[in-house]
Image (cartoon, rainbow, N blue to C red; front, side, top):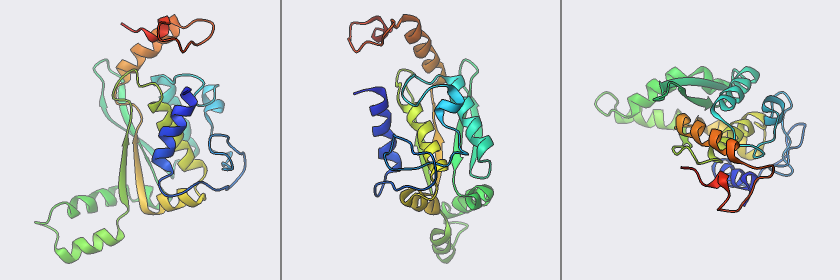
Amino acid sequence: MSAKQIIKAISVSVVAITASFNASAANTEAMWPGTAYNQQIPTFKQVLGYDVGERITNYNDMRRYLSALEQAAPDRIKVFKYANSWEGRELVYAVVGTAKHIRSLETLANNTQALADPRITSEKEAKSLIKNLPTSVWLQYAVHGNEISSTDAALFTAYHLLAAPNDAVNSKILDNTVVFIDPLQNPDGRERFVTRYYATVGLEHSADRLSAEHNEP
C-alpha cells in the first residue's frame, strides 16, 4: 500500500464517520472522487509544493501548512501551543469548527467543565448542557517518530473539514462537534526519522525491506 493510500485510509476512518462524501464547491480533489473543494482553502501543493502523500511532511512543513489554513479561515480554525518537546519544538493542536463554535471556545470549555462536576451542576442544568453543547472530538496523531502517514492524514483531515463545509457528512460533523487535531505528538522523533530517510533514499523510493531507507538505527 502506498503512502497516499495509507493517508486516505486513515483520513476516511476519521472524517467519513457516517456516509460517503458529496460535491460542494469548486476544484475537484482526487482524494475523495466527486468531492469539490473551496479554492480559498490552500492545498498541500500550493503551500508545500507537493501533493499529500508524495513526501513525508516534516515538522516545519506541518507548522507551515497549519498556519496557512489558519490564515485562510481564521474564523473556523485556531492553532494553540500546549507544550515544548525535549528538543524545544512547539507542540500544537488545531481546533476546527463552525464560526459560531470557534467564537465560543471559552464558553464551550467552561460549560464542558461544569458538566463534568455534579457538585456544582444540577441534573436539570446538566441535561440542558448536554442538549446544547457540541461534542468534542480529539484526534491525536504520530506518537512514534516513524509513523510516516499519520501527520499527513491529520493535515488533510483539517483541510477537508475546512474546504468542504457544505458536504453532507462535513456539515453534520461541524454542526454537532468541535474537532481537536493534534497532528504530531513526537516532533523530535519525526525529524530524526525524516532527516535520515531523505539522507539514505536513492533516486527512487524502494519498497524493499532491505533498502537503506527502511533500516533506521
